[in-house]
Image 1 (cartoon, rainbow, N blue to C red):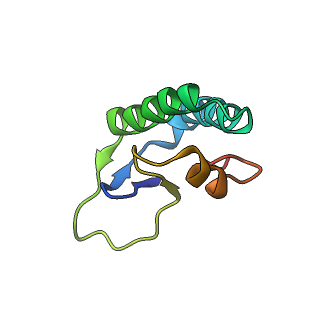
Image 2 (cartoon, rainbow, N blue to C red):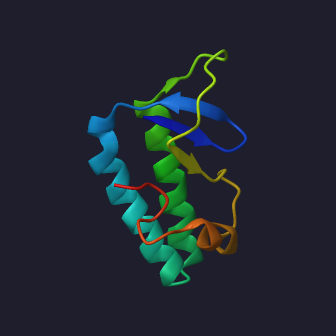
Length: 92
């Protein structure tokens, strides 16, 4: 699975990591729905850190669409609210 963190690039993430990423994604969606900016900041940072930890940078010459696009760390709660779908940011 290819995950793009906007402003940082693409990472290859093993699909077996999807459940743990979806757990953080669900926490993020809950914080956004509750309009809890402090929790939102913490969970967004945790989600991005986890993706960076489990992912490997995709080669620069890899020309493929990203399976998941995550917002940058400095995104606002309102910006992420606009990106959320019924499945959160990470489908599955």
